[in-house]
Length: 265
Figure 1 (tube, rainbow, N blue to C red):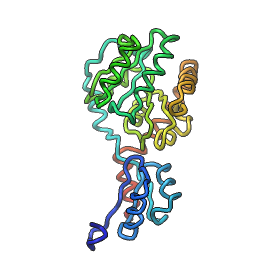
Figure 2: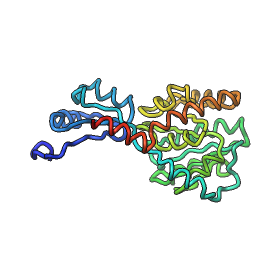
Figure 3: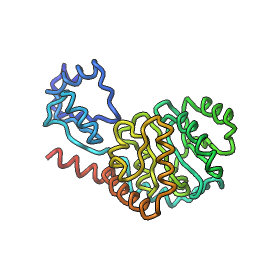
Figure 4: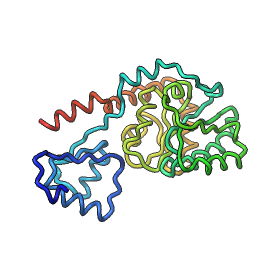
């Protein structure tokens, strides 16, 4: 439509999520370059990806973090005081949140949890979310005899009580950009253990300075970083949480508005 009609309205292309730059998408985006005002990217990593592929004019590509965190909404949800299952605890619970899909890589998480639970017998794992892989995950949990350790709790409208009462937030995704739940967990002062998948987690966690990154799909690296968390001093964990929360504030609705206003000047 942009190609065939001369719109008076100025058009901004918002890249949302990690873009798979196949041949057709590259051709299409290059073709509309002259017809759009700006292209916005939710992460610096994706911005650099677009630049390196020479898809759009360099001066048109702008960094604009998504308006993921609505602080007033978060504050209201934290006051709701929802009932959380009694097996969820700050001492022993790992939490992961997301749709039960291939992207979120929960099969890997269950496999690696099986290994770490041999040493940390009191540890449990809760996964919030629904999706097409539920039956696959349920079968794997049953086959591993971990039904009393891993809990698929389904979709929860309010995740903040679960985050508050859990020890570590785990993200095992194959790709994220930037990673909505990762930001919600970081803003909630959680210690984060995340895959180094493209593109958001590495940037948000500042290559490990704001949390812990493991090589995607590497059980050994996951376990190694998990051990680092368990053996870290509280002061080290606290420093990472403070730095992460500061980074997460880039993705507030207010900050998004301010940056968009600057872009449009």
